[in-house]
Image (cartoon, rainbow, N blue to C red; front, side):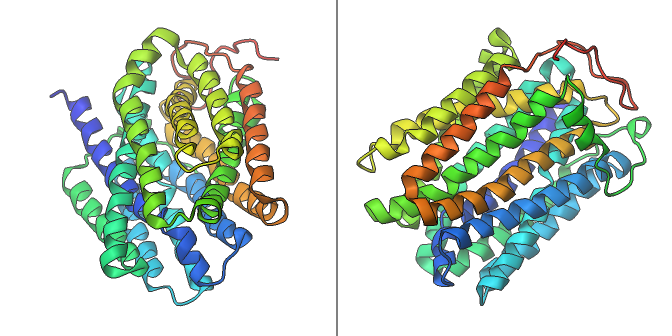
Length: 404
């Protein structure tokens, strides 16, 4: 196996184990929050604080990995994740739960470092397909995680789920410590301040980056409305619990793993990134807004398939495009800037949509989230894939594709 493929396999395993731990928590979180008296806005705050800390981490960790390398940052963040999940399992109050989710959110900021790792070991032509591996790891994590979480909750209660997730983090740390090599060559390292928003400002200001960065923020903002409203709606309308929600997320994981692990590369070679970004965003808008017309639990699933397929073709294409616009010495910083926008969308969205759910009900929440996703689709029409080599180290921009 070529060295680059071996390293891709290792980072795939690292992200998979990381996401299996995340997948463990997601189906039980709304019901765990209800034990402490949380309503829609309270549940939204748990998701929001996770993403707020993820925003802080992506700003810090991406640039830090450009300075010291990917390996030490990944290893340290995995250990932080273990601490957060242990606190989750030990939570004695809603405030404790908030703190646990904040710590886990900071650890979750390492996704930008994993993406930078992929960028280090792939050529520009293979970049988007390499990013698809991370999506496949996400998908498989969602397949394994919810099922494992259901077993843990059945035999040990909701608290046991946190301890199992912490155990997965420790397994992840040990495996990564012994088999994950450093990917960033010394000549590509760059000294940056730990809190540097330069690349975030650049991504929003420069015409060749701006549409892709805006979409990076709008998609998770809209998607967070769906994530907040769906468990509460399904519990109220159809009596769902953590088991049914676990099956739901497993279906999403199967679709993501299949599309991003196998189909994406074949499709992307024929269409390019920009078409997949646009089609995927449109599919997500339809899949979210259509939920209120489903009058049985089974009728939810066709829309879930559309939503998951759209997300699975959009996410790696969008990440790959941004990576190809960045220079080799700034992959971590630019991936961190893009992920910071994602985290801000996931922070602000749950709070706003959670409040909307409490005030306006599920239909208003799903429709509003679908409308925001439609705005994201409109912005995708402004994206131009320049088809050029990455910029030089130091941040020189690639040829402006002519976006006004």
